[in-house]
Each structure stands twice: as structure tokens, then as C-alpha cells.
Image (cartoon, rainbow, N blue to C red; front, side, top):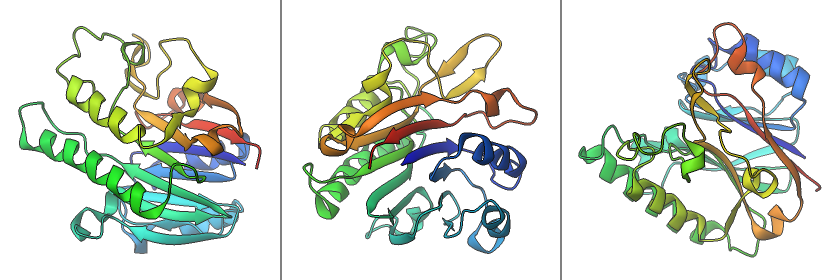
Amino acid sequence: MRIATWNVNSVRARMPLVAEFLERAQPDVLCMQETKVVDDDFPAEAFTALGFAGEKSYNGVAIAGRLPLTVLQRGFEDDPADAPRLLVARVGRLPVVNTYVPQGKAADDPAFRYKLEWMARLRDLFGRISTPRSRLLWVGDMNVAPEERDVYDPKALRQHPDFHPEARAALADTMAWGFVDCFRQHNDEGAQYTFFESVEKGHGWRVDHILATRSLARLCTGSWIDMAPRLADRPSDHTPLLAEFDL
């Protein structure tokens, strides 16, 4: 099974790039973030034409798949207003959690506290819906770069909400529930980015992730970043991340 995650930054504006990516990269599942569209305006027919029946969206995150797809939960049970950021679904027999973690604005802004709390609530959610021993996939735009090699200037960006020590600790704590970074399982080199302020200057961040519980990570045969959509005309500022699983 080939999984892709991509912050498309408006699925309607990016649909030609999405279509090209799906036909070229041939993922079985595409998890999208920042779709910027309500359900009624989601381009379902365009996905169906590409063989992706069963797409589901909720004004922020969406999952399109070639396999049977069942939505299990939208948002946290105690916060319906934040539903656009979280979608739990079963794709085939695999549970998938697609997230668009809050950005946080600035380290001294209340929104940053909300980001940290959001991550803690997500860890609690994992404990309610699964166990670390089970197969579970967590993907999306996490708005956190985990390590210094995951940003272009770690010293200058230390106080940025996407690289702040507290944000990195929050991500690490949530991952410690039982997740493995599939990209880092197969790639050690730095300067591998999924979001770019400037491709030309190499100003990038690795903030999009595919994370799997250990039993699932053992079946991951590869993970890679696809730069082609970021280098195309009218791109999103993010580019797809993919992983392959021998399921």
C-alpha cells in the first residue's frame, strides 16, 4: 500500500497538480490538509474520474483512496468546532489518522498553548482508539520540525512555533505513545524538506510526516519526498511525502 500526505493549500486551486501527482505517483491513499473547501464544494467528481471513489473531506482535511474508506471520527469528541483539523478513517483494513495540527502563530501567543494542548489531546485520542501494539497510521501537516536537520537554519528559527523546543517536545511526547517516523526510518540525510519558504534558497522545513506504530513500521519498505509538485506552476508551499507498506 502506498500512502501519501500533502498540504495542498486549496484542493480546488491545486486540482490539476493533484491529478498529475495521482496519475504519476500512483498512491493508494492520499491524505490532504488545508483543503480550504466545505464538503459540498469538494471536487469529488475529479477524484472519481481518477479512480479515487470514496473521498471524504471536512473543510480542512480530506482522505481520498482507491480502497474502501469508512470515516470513524471527525475532530475531538469534546471540540466539534475543531473538526476540520482531524479525520480518523479506516482505509481498507488500516486505521488512518489525518491531522492538520494548529500552527501556533508565535511562542508568546495563546494559540501556541492551544497547539501544545492539541497535541496532548491527540495522544489521549490514540489511547482511546487503539494500542501501540496495533497497526495505526498517523499522517499530516504536524506544523513541527522534529530535529535541527529538519530546518534550514535551526539557530535563527529556534523560537518559531514550528521549531520551538516546547513544540518539538510536544510532538516527541505524542510520538512516544508508540510511533515511528517512517521517513527517518529510511533516510538519514538532512535538508530534506516538505515545506518551503523558498526552494531557490533552500529555505525549507520538514513538518509533514507519516508516522506508524512499530508493528506497521516494520512493514514500511520506503519513504520519500516528491519535489515535482513544489517545482510546478502555481504550487502549494508544501510538497507530497509518501511511504510504501508491504500489507
